[in-house]
Amino acid sequence: MSEAQTPNYSDFLSLEARTRARSAIKQLRPYFEIPGMISFGGGYPHPSTWPVNGMTLSVPFAEKSVFVPGYETTSADKLHPLEEYVKPAAGEPLDPNLAVELQYGKTYGAPHLVDWLTEHIKRTHNPPNDNWEVLNTAGNTDGFDGLLRTLFQRGDSMLVEEFAYPGSLVAAQTQGVSCVGVPMDGDGILVPEMDKILSEWDEGKRGARKPKAVLMVPTCSNPTGYTMPAARKRELYAVARKHNILIFEDDPYCFLQIRKYEDAGKLLPIEETFLSMDVDGRVLRLDSFSKIVAPGSRCGWLTGPREIVSAVMQRSEASTQCPSGFTVSAIAAVVRAWSGHEGFEQRYLPHISRVYEERARAMVSFFEQYLPKEAAEWPAPSGGMFIWLRLRVENHPKRDELSPEDVAERAFQKAVDEKVLTVPSKFFKGEGLPDWTKEQEQKRIFLRICYATPTIEQLETGVQRLAKALKEEWEL
Ligand SMILES: Cc1ncc(COP(=O)(O)O)c(C=O)c1O
Image (cartoon, rainbow, N blue to C red; front, side):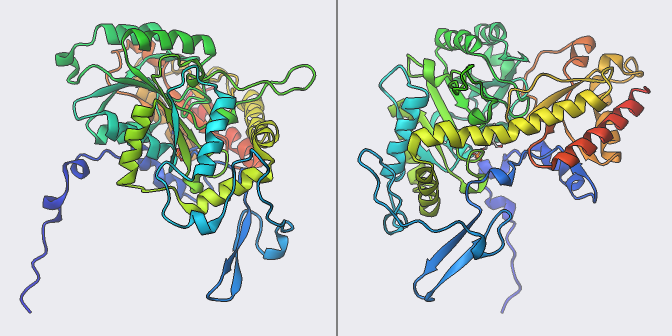
């Protein structure tokens, strides 16, 4: 045998692989490993909200049924009683059946689940145009990748929130699409700023073609936790129309919003969405089961104009092929167990949002109790999993010598020394933001605090540690 001639593998990498962006947040990974660290860093849903906590699978060739444990369920006798399978009632589309689901299926998704999702979209958003359809995706990451590959080329650009979800930023950057940040306030994107950016767009200076779309996480955003009110959405829609751009509504926290009730205790609808005001057919809405079933379900749905959704479907034909049959059956079975749309909307979804609401309220009460107001401020939570804690850099004793980002870094490190992990706002910034003055920038330094996964006791201890770190750093 001759000497091995190991290829230089980098010569084989595609342009996409060579230009792949990675989320800078990955730098924080080593901190997660530190023993005793309380993490407000990750964005992981609480497993108690997962609607499946164990399952048994009947395995014909092995002639036995096997048990798969789940959250707080370690043996099959802890499972709830087995119900006989009943055929769906008339008009009820959901009909999970592994004999069908485990076969190659339609790329749009299993027809019974797609019909159910279509009805869900009508009931919840009632889009005011008729030209829309639903594609079952493998979650919003997959749906957004489909939009990127279907609508963008290298050298294109899109608008994003000043502080945006890094997963989307890196996906776009990898495709050579620049993500231009639009300044925001506590209600989301500042619409006059968006109008100005689009009106004054200079391809030469920006190094990219005029944006084709604006991407937002309009409800209980990751990272800011902000929810854009309906009036702001209408203003933004008008500007999108003026410049003829698309709106990407990435809304995985939509049903985690703190729900409002009428005096008589009746549940009020969720905040109006972009899809619900889309007379033109310019909204591409990304929904996901990740936060309302479980992230590991890898299941979501894209809704929008047929011409675009069918083009994304053709991308899926050549990549994910069709949704996972195990997931489709499990989700369809879970939703059926809640008695269709009515039970899903009135009982199931409010149950999940209440779990996070209790945590959000606990967190804010710990902030009130422990955090020094000279060093930090926070908004009233609108729901979801995050609070955007503003560091009051303008009060920091070394504000004149240090840059605002240096102050943020010191606060972050002090908190790590106290064994509490947060995520500084620099990790979420879009590109091409204005050159802020030092005073303006001092007001734009935040820590993302995720309250979804630690226990309530850990939330309290974590806030006490953060308070100690901030008091030391601000010399209070
Ligand atoms: C804003 C936002 N978009 C998309 C995703 C990814 O969602 P999925 O699990 O559906 O791919 C996340 C997950 O954290 C998110 O926060």
